[in-house]
Image (tube, rainbow, N blue to C red):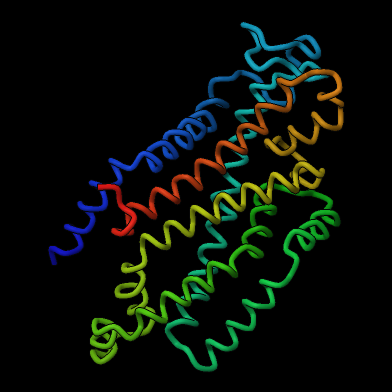
Length: 286
C-alpha cells in the first residue's frame, strides 16, 4: 500500500528539480494565464476598430494595431484562448480514443485485436491533413469545437498503437492474472490494474497530442480554413499575410502569433522530455 505514495513522492522530488519540466511549465502557465485573464481585462473585442491603422507598438497599444486599426494584443490573447481550447479538446479526444482502442486491443488480443489494429492502420495511413482540408473546405460554418473534433478523430492512431504495446506487456503480470482469476471484469481490470501503471505514459501521450492538435489547427487556420467566427493565432498569421504585413514592415502583426505558437508547442515538447527524465530512473539527473 505504501509503494504508490512512495513512488509519487519520489517522482515529485525529481519533478521539482527538473529544469526542462519547470521551464516548460512556466512558459505554458504564462500563456495560459494570458489566455484566461487577458479577455477579461481588455474592454473590447479582437475585431473591434479601436485605434489608428497600422500603428506600431506604443504605450496605448502594446502590440500595435492592424491595417484596420484592430488591437493586436486583443487578438493575441483571444487567439491564445482558441489555441488552448483546440489543443485540450482535440488532444483530449484523440487521447480518449487512443486509450479505448489501445487498452481493448492490447488486453483482449485475438480477433478483437486484429479488427482494432486494422482500423488503426487504416486511419494511420490516411493523409490526415488532406482529409481535414477537404472537410473544412466544404463546411459552411466552422467552429473551434468542430475543428477540434476532426483533429481528434484523425490524430489517435499512433497513441493507440503505443498504448496497445504497453498493455501487451502488462496483461501477463501477476497482479493482472490475480485480478482475472478473482472474477474481476475486463473494464475494471484495465481501469484499476493496468491504467494506473501507465499513468505517467498516458499523461505524456496527452501532452504530445495537445501539441500536435495546436500545430494542425494553426496550419488549417493559416491557409484560411480556420473558424469562420472569432480569432486564433493561425488566423492572425493568415490575415497578416493576406494584407501584406511583411511587405509593409508591420512585424508586430505576425511575430506575436508565430512566436506564441512556437513557444507553446516547444514548451510542451520540452515538458515531455522533462517528464520522461522524471519517470524514467535511467534518465534522471541525480
